[in-house]
Length: 86
Image (spheres, rainbow, N blue to C red):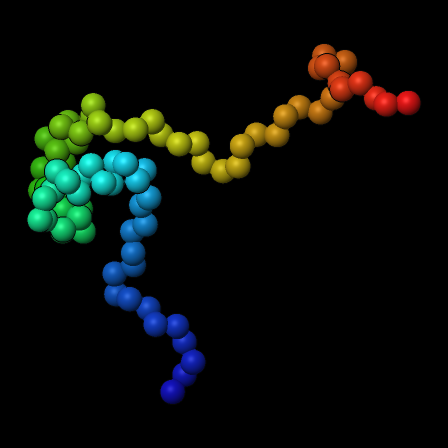
């Protein structure tokens, strides 16, 4: 038997909403499962994308920048370099 990782047919979708938002959403869902709700939302999106996305416009967060934050510029004539100790 070859040594390989167990690969699921459907790869996971990892989302980490803020804890307070997740708790509020679970309260709003009541007895419904969060995972089933996400699958239902994806199903509704596929069925009527324009209508579904229009309903979400006011709730969508700002797009996060990709990659690492930019480095600060190196010290030069235009920047204030920290004072050196003697």
